[in-house]
Image 1 (tube, rainbow, N blue to C red):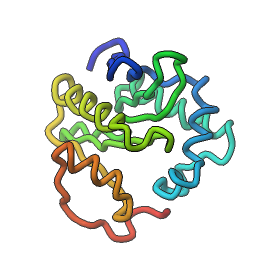
Image 2: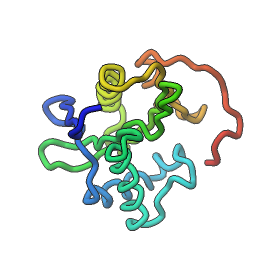
Image 3: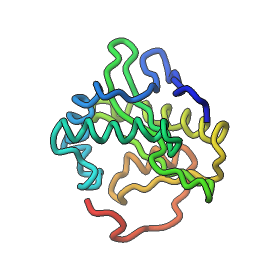
Length: 165
């Protein structure tokens, strides 16, 4: 993986950049939106902005500690965080990554996450020793499943009672 955090342009309006502690307010606001939080494991939801800061520090440190990499999806015009995506878990000995992502609801249906995930999937296969990228979603998260299918992910199975929501 590159020594400096990779900034990846998505289009004329958005880019993938390093997450910052200053993103905590926007992250806290959209991750706790009723439309989003229904698809986030309960123990992963920050219940206040201090916990959101702590969560973002964890994500920032993934890259610094070479345990994964996580990007902010940011609006270029105002640098505002609108989502995140990345690899929270890197199983190096198995050359496998777990893809995780979230997006503020006002940006759903605009192809933004599809663009972001395409870029980071290409990044992983080009720069990280990886053979497999996997994603876990709830069976009723139809929008997420649709994004994954567009990216040629295949369903390997149904993990009953795997995570608590």
